[in-house]
Length: 109
Image 1 (cartoon, rainbow, N blue to C red):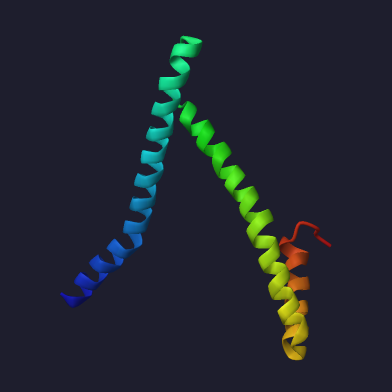
Image 2 (tube, rainbow, N blue to C red):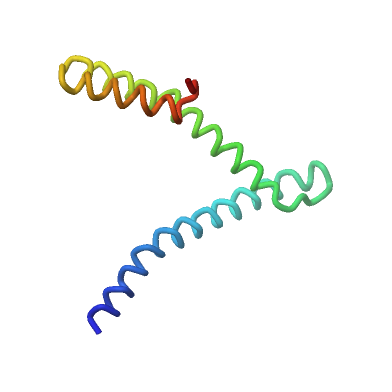
């Protein structure tokens, strides 16, 4: 019986974050879609269902771009400088970095 309760709790722990994320995405979609419909329907005269989805996709792409350029690159450069100063870590890091960039990097060798 304890195993079954353990499986139930594990199932909840796996499912809850997905369900919460899905709910938040749905609510944001509804919010953005309703605002766009209230603003655009009087201007263009027609109702375009799902327009919020396109706006959300564009917003997520913008956040991804800004996150990569403003946050990720400076952090990576900072940690690279630190790792380059430690001899053993420098060797291991550069070898692993070359290996990973050969397979999944933007410039495949």
